[in-house]
Image 1: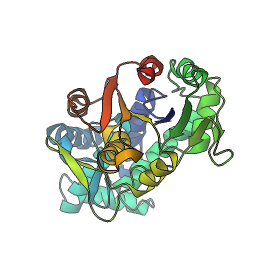
Image 2 (image 1 turned 30 degrees about the vertical axis):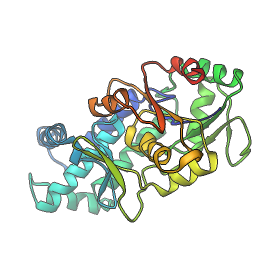
Image 3 (image 1 turned 180 degrees about the vertical axis):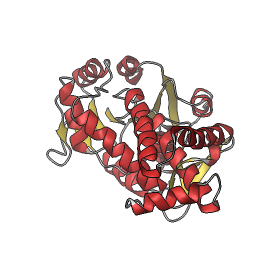
Image 4 (image 1 turned 120 degrees about the vertical axis):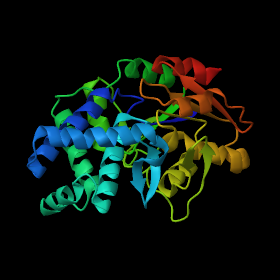
Length: 298
């Protein structure tokens, strides 16, 4: 079976990296704003409270729409903080219009660009070996899948080189899709799962409208035609495969979709998978990565 797996949060534990982005964001806000720590902490506290009250309205925004929600993982939480601050700056609330001006003088178009800058600073620390995010179960799980004759394609928003380097740090050898598109274990980075199409398309899960118009990710899935997809973020990783299973007949019908449960996995996505009675796909929550080889064979 061909298995498409996300990387960050599935084959890594992104907790340390996610918390580090948040720390850098605070440090950089202090530097750019010139404000006292109490003021910066107040801004972040206000934003945190809003994200907790209305997570279905906030998160990683593309074309003005939420591509992934603020409570789906720690990286997206930081995107949500930035989007919330951007919204308030536009309204000149909490004194954030002045802060946006300071960011612009530093060369940032908006708070989202600033958050991406903070994320990039974290990536450099991981590359330098200061953070080692590979999940301890990853190597054994990959060996078990490949040993059973399966094909594993890592499809991620992260860059291919980052993924290959983190794999190598854990004693795992993979090849890039560009180098060998027929390899049984390969990496397709820069997948742009977050990119949304011009016209909104999706379905509701309670208060959440989950977008499935993801043209770049859809092209990859069409090329790969996986029998299973695993991800830790329902919106980015699993919503589109579920849509394809529902609408594309035999090409995707019967696909196995696995939500890798983490401590940050929100109740709404966990319950969506646990309570699923989808006729077109098989959905399951994985408590541990090591469960995947046996689950694939069921």
